[in-house]
Image (tube, rainbow, N blue to C red):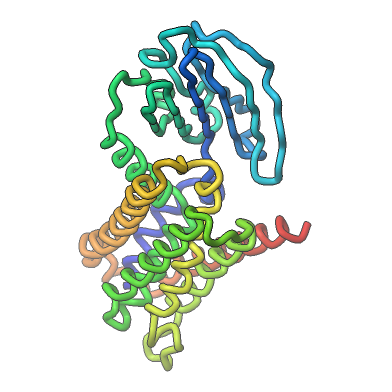
Length: 331
């Protein structure tokens, strides 16, 4: 199975690894519309952005500014609030979204509360940064958009992908793949739900450090020779999977709890986002197993040390992340 990791990890290593270890905070635009056509606008962005990026909200051109934006800053976000007048017709039928998402390499989340009592939620991306505010609400779009967001954040986060791969490698050696992945998913779901619902609050930087440490521990465990006496992790991989699943849940929720999930639709959005994360994890597992079946005949002719290269690369990258994130905490 180490050779399976070689093919899969080398493919991942071809991407800009550090760049993929991105944060999970998208831009958030919230608009509350009143019966007279006036609307309160709140625009929230993370304090750290891609150099040269200039994300800005887009409202219908007929909306008139009533008050100048007032900006407040916290360690977690930068928030601007102002009010507009969109006339008697309101926002329905107009374009809303963001400009500059492509440069910032992020998604945008739009939450609208219309004067007729309807709520509209959309996840917008660089390919389609604007959408027309519907005259009739579509609840299925919330499920689809947040499930897709969960999948994308899962497969595009290199620390998360490497951790799942490490779990697979360790679990297969003890024939406990299903229970290990299930334990990881349960642990992740528990803390993701608790954090988003406001039951727990943990600073994101220590959590990110512990996630990187988990990748390093799994790389070490996967590198142990099969003949060695199995460690506690090797004998009960599902225990560590559940424990680090709790951390990964906090990692995903640290940004979404503040800037993503609309409070009025938290249960539905949380359910679909969680399902998307699970689908992304399953995709990684199936891709790893499928890759192994394809390349297994080819690797039988290669030297034994080839299988160790990606595992040491995984451990080295995780050690770098640990150092980088520790510096961010104590600097």
